[in-house]
Image 1: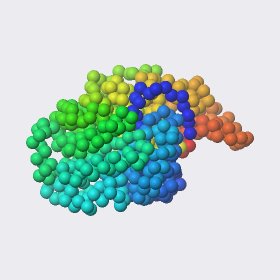
Image 2: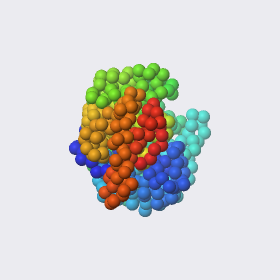
Image 3: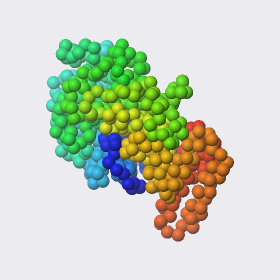
Image 4: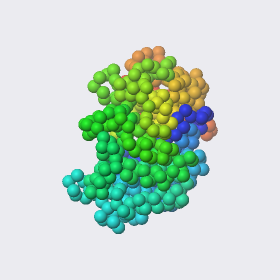
Length: 477
């Protein structure tokens, strides 16, 4: 795997976001999935180790701090033993494994299995702890955060997690916009600002005690918690109108921001705050790569209506999460360098300390490899141009900074539909000598040439088959 020279990153608390069941880096496992968020793990337990060891090697080589894993602990992929192996290997490489922890939903600390810190086990032992829906009926799979046994269960589980595993942090979620309507939870409103959205109040009920327990780890670990919203100020009346897709937080400032330990890290959803590929207004779609070729800070990137240039996230510490390049946006296998660049640039300008993107597809898939390399580059140099990306990052993968720059120039032309016959011939002329060398196969050093050839072979296929508009061909490295 690549080992790139990287400086101290401008966005140091950046990480990859994954579900275990749909992270497919071991391509021959018949249980590989490409969809879902609460799925059974159908792959071999050994594949869990292989997927995340390969991803760890990539992170170590690209200067990316951590890997968030939802489904970190399951009986079906080795339980505690395999969780330790994944965490220990990453720690040995300087990469932080961040288990996803569901406080009141999403499995708990031990996502799936017969374990005391699994939500299903807790609900089996405390059937009266089920979250109550608006209709007064128990909600399947959700835990009431005001139940008398909840606080001790979560506190003991978090303590066990950090004692048992060499992890580098955790990511807390509580079940998106779920709200418990039991009398205890509703009584909690009396001591809470009336204009605060219900789902933020519900998050506070489970996040605040968990974060207080985690406070001793916050100086050395990534302790993040999900808001499920962007940080664009809005009105409570806009809740559930779809406005959250544009980054609205339905208030001017969530009350829990001022009640959590200040060193915890708020994870804001940036997905709707950046330009959208499906926006009905073409002028509001992601900028063409040409806009970033020689300008690392184009005005259009900082004047998108969904993210005002002077807007900063509330609270002391924050990171952003982009869903682009995943099943959630319908673009799991697509190239989205423009969005990565925009997200990193705007996050940096807004004072965030990190960005996370999905990382479930293998870098053997060339568009995914380009996305991950761009992510690595722009968390280190968010204000760089694409030409800089070509020279400083792709240049380390390809033959030289000049070749990296040439590759970016040709990719920009391909995306923009301006690739000339001469440029198409240039791609073939660079690719063909490498193919001849690989065919001769004189020694293992040709593996390096093979890696370089794969990028050029993919680019030639796109140019030859006229797929510049979407670049979705599943060409694998």
